Amino acid sequence: MIEQQKQRIEMEITKQLDDLDRTVLRKMQADMHDCAAKCCKDMASSMDTVQQCVERCSVPAQRAQQHVETEMNSFNNRLQRCVMDCNDSIKDKMGPNPSEGEKAKYTAEFERCAIKCVDKHVEILPNMFASMRKVLQRRSSACIKVFPQKKHTRVVKMSIFRSKIILASSAIGTLIGGTVLLKDYMQGAKFQNSDIRADGKVVIVTGANTGIGKETAHYLARRGAHVYMACRDMKKCEEARTDIVLDTRNPQVFCRECDLASMQSIRQFVKQFKSEQQRLDILINNAGVMRCPRTVTKEGIELQLGVNHMGHFLLTNLLLDQLKLSAPSRIVVVSSLAHTRGQIALDDLNSIKSYDEARAYEQSKLANVLFTRELAKRLQGTGVTVNAVHPGIVDTELMRHMSIFNSWFSAIFVKPFVWPFLKSPLYGAQTSVYAALEPSLEKVSGQYFSDCAPKEVAEQAKDEQVAKWLWAVSEKWTGTLTGTAAVS
Image (spheres, rainbow, N blue to C red):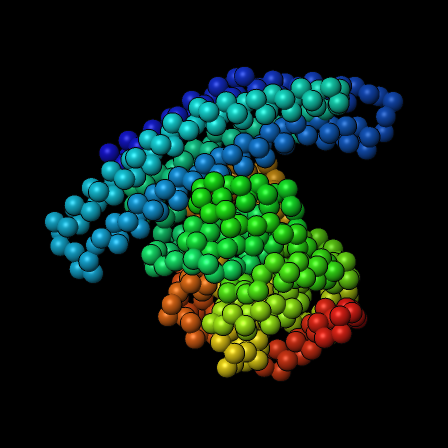
């Protein structure tokens, strides 16, 4: 029965994708080849000019790929949430030690619920693909008019839509089946207290327009929280907010601009938030960048350190007064297992002397844990707790700068093998939600959690002297005390 549902999804997606391929995608591929051929026939231009021409030819295909992937990821997440709700409902009914007869009964009930999810979402697919077709056709026509010589490169990516989407549907099938296949196992623990509400609680989630942040905001909104989505890209934020509001029917979800690479933007966000809200129950420092080429913030701080640590350091300190007034309240800092490989470069914190994108990321994640532990000490007796979490290895936009995930070779040969080991954003958000809502953690502070359970931090994360040094430098660089950043 479950295998049949899995096949239904795969067959319907394959059918719709074949039609999309025949009506839109093949023409785009042909246009890319034609465009690239014209570029190569231009004997008067330089090699660089021809290469740029060829690269411009890929623009429609790249945009098409992004649009299809976005729509399919959204479909996948909706279906996952539906099935997870079935799972939660059954778990709530089961006792601690169900008999074999009860297990069979609840398994059958789960399957019936999951099949309804499949029925509902299979009905969505034709309209979803029809809408995609219209968007792609409009974009293709617009590109032809504006760019008479455009469309090539990465053509192979067009042909992998099918394999990638079928992989996604296989993941859905795995979830529906409730099996213990590798992908399902690698999703990790799920926050078990599904009946806990957050009605009236005011929450800020940074980086809430995509990935883990969006799923965290969605989860909290569904439980009645007033959610402030602090994001840099307001267009993406509004799109994510619309999805969340429509799905949760909670209108108390708000987009507010907050660029963590700008101290001025952070201060403006806090000023606006305080003018609108008198309290803050939960602050989730989720936003981050990962392994990007060396770039700096508006104040000249290396971007990974600036966004992942310094920006959140300033944001948190500026909101501490409201957190204290709202106690018991919580701060959740999204760190990473990468902190175990990190070292704080005391003589080159800003990576001026040398820069390695991996080491810079690991340093920023170690800074998250050091900050969490030091802040916990400073907040003792206030009723405000702060804990760090490792979300797991999650398939999100955070990986967009990692070259291993960004080539056509990777798309065909690497991702299909790495994919089973990646958590979905939905599961990646579970530990953040656990740290934000779990009642037993009300007085727990300064800890590090992974898969909804406490974990030991690396030895270098326990260095109190380095934590104090980092705090002092962070105060200076962010202007937390003076109001003026002074990076040196």
